[in-house]
Image 1 (tube, rainbow, N blue to C red):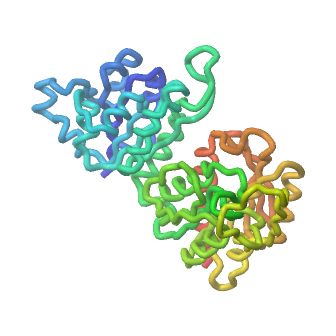
Image 2 (image 1 turned 180 degrees about the horizontal axis):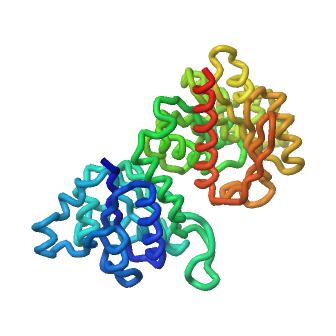
Image 3 (image 1 turned 180 degrees about the vertical axis):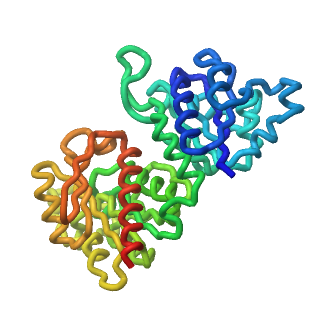
Amino acid sequence: MSKRVLLIIGGGIAAYKSLELIRRLKDAGVSVRVVMTDAAQRFVTPLAAGALVGERVFTDLFDQTQEFDVGHIRLARECDLIVVAPATADLMAKAAHGLANDLASAVLLATDKPVLMAPVMNPHMWANAATQRNFATLQAQGLRFIGPNEGEMAERGERGVGRMAEPEEIRDAALAALSDGPLKGKRALVTAGPTIEAIDPVRFISNRSSGKQGYAIAAALAELGAEVTLVSGPTNLPVPFGVKRIAIESAREMLEASEAALPLDVAVMVAAVADWRPTKEAPTKIKKGAAGVPAIALQENPDILATLSKLGKKRPKLVVGFAAETNDVEDNARAKIAKKGCDWIVANDVSGDVMGGAENQVLLITKDKTEAWPRMAKEAVARKLAAEIAKSLTAKARRK
């Protein structure tokens, strides 16, 4: 029996892409039913969507014929996955707050199936605090997300985060959600965010890091079925669905939590770990005074990537490091592979807008080759890297 997707099409200009999504899902052998909101019908017609799925499209919560024949409860349950594309700010808000005043929102409230949302909206709407609260609420409730991506918007001159993910991206995310995933049964560790090293109770040394890339990688590995432990320095990011987060502050705490996660199949070390820490932490706040600027003696922090790479029999099957460079990116990354003993390095030039930004451009460097990836959303980088990891671990398993 083929997998069944209920596609909810929301009222955004990207609704036209949902027709292509239907085709791609059906080409992958997935059975598709469609619910359309009133606003969605301003952009694409039920006739067009119905022609693609081969049955009528459901539009009205109070259609007596549809309710008698199928009904929103059956629609919510007679599927393996619900995909909301486009997921508008309105649909996200309704789902986050349990509103059910139309067929789409009633289905979302009534379902016990996994839900994948592909948000689309103006960048200012996406960045609005209300939308971000709803996004965090839905993630906490277990809903999965694909996108939004960054790029040109429908409004002239507008660019930013808010574009709906492309149909093939949504299809891939849906297929991953429908399957056990190629990483089922695999244990993964991801480190993310900065570490902070205390000078006194109010001051510390740290590195720049938003944690966005590491969190995206943890989410992508979990979507492929891995059991993921995310060891994270301080960030403001919500915990990805299906991921166990361990919050730490210092490099020593990160190393301890990483070693506690063993045994592992893969370790992806994305965190911006502070290289040094003060030799002594002052027990009280250091006051400004006649003595002038205090001298702070530093000592080296433990090298977490090198430690995990050189564990012998306890070593993860695949260790992936990250190299944030400002010059000679490939040469520095290759030197890092040799020095640390890891298998791969994901290297990027952070002299631009990468830190805290929505996009990344990286080199995937192994001992044998260098692969340059185009600039893309950090979520897309994460999915591509997760796919490479799955391919590598599958190949290692076959060779045994």
